Length: 152
Image 1: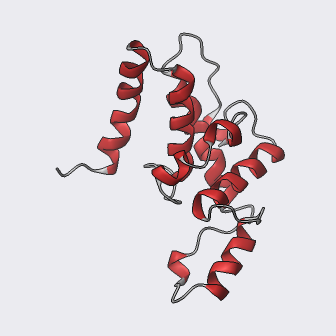
Image 2: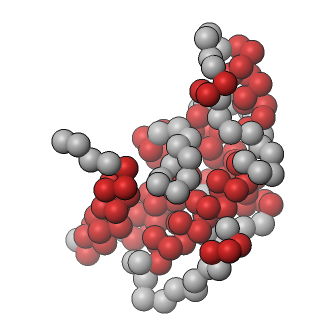
């Protein structure tokens, strides 16, 4: 089966709508969408895997992810992504994880390192993921406060 990433992304929401119709919790799929957007979609870079994202307790770590875009929410999302990449690590910033991987991993290249914590890299990725999550999660709702795409 040869499915492109765009086709897989396009199928996520219809599958979620079908599952909700058949009794699966809508909230459960909102967290699946949040995890999927953070770990990579057509409009965000790939970071980690979907499986690792779902095993890293998105319900606990991403509960305010669509509602707020303040520094605290972005920091929590960064910590979540770090846990997706390296479970049970003590690091709170992606730069710490990058340093650890670069200096203590066997044969890691610069292309394999996760993005930096700088204002132009990871926070932009997280804000794009917030916007995408809001748009996709709102498809399951009759009421929706649209976010301004120019802010993301």
